[in-house]
Length: 422
Image (tube, rainbow, N blue to C red; front, side):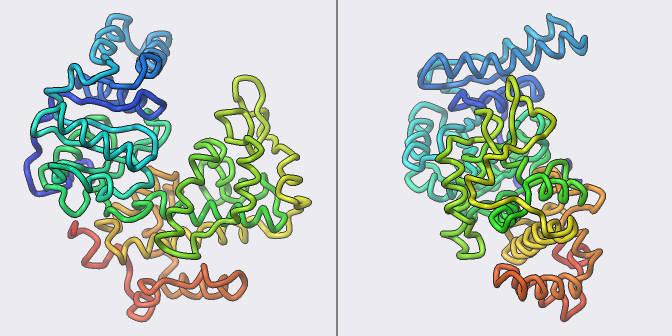
């Protein structure tokens, strides 16, 4: 169903070639899915040739693996690679239909990119920002053509994660939405259209879940106990291992943004995050995280680094059962998902379920947060959240949406709102 959803009533505009700003990890991954999966010519711009070479090597490595495994011929590899080119200036950008920006999370820099694309590209060129934490409306604030600015949020690693969030701001045109959704589908992605509110959808429901895992660490729970509890619940990896995988610096930078937008329920034990980052722990990417990494960043039989407990200032003794650990993390995620539904951050319960399953790895056998809340029933959800709020504080207070639904005995998936796509 989502694969067929055009995302908007308008017909998409032209989509024959794509530009990418930034040849880093995200830029390289986006170039690969655009050229090698979508079959579209890609031009990469980076401030130095090193960045362009990095992006080209990213695609070469993925294609070379396919050749080695005999999935494709060397001639096919060369043909696909020939679709990607690069430059340190805007040569070759004038005819691009859509430009994806994947530069640093810095608002003035992204606004400058909008201005440069408007100066160097065609009048119809769409500017799509791969931001994870900056409002699209702010990125488009000084744009000459704000209706052609949109968010297109990929998840890392780009070649593996099936979800993208398409984020129109207040002035984005219906055609821009339709064209961006069309591109995402060409790239082999499942797009969901979400509102331009802090954290969008996926990061917003993920943050309280990760925060709670960190909070339990400060209470003395062991890293491997917390992770094992959530794997037992059905997630592919636990929250702390997830933080190591995405990068502790990357994974925590959204938290202050969310706290500023939504208040105290998003506050993380800041001193803990700071002391971990100050100890130069970024996770798998620099071989120093919550877990120990052997050669080449490979996890050595998933052993926790014992120095973590000293850093946090706790002993590391598990007191909670696996079920209690999972409940504390998951209930906050569900409560936030219900808020997103209420605020129309997502267009339907279906989109909310798809976003969580494909973007976070929410247990697919539970159907997603909304299917799961429907299975539990709103009354049970409210009772559980009230019990947790009495034990752990107001961040567990059930949101108005759930309280209303419990009173009326409503469900998300049978609600009229579920499939009207508004």
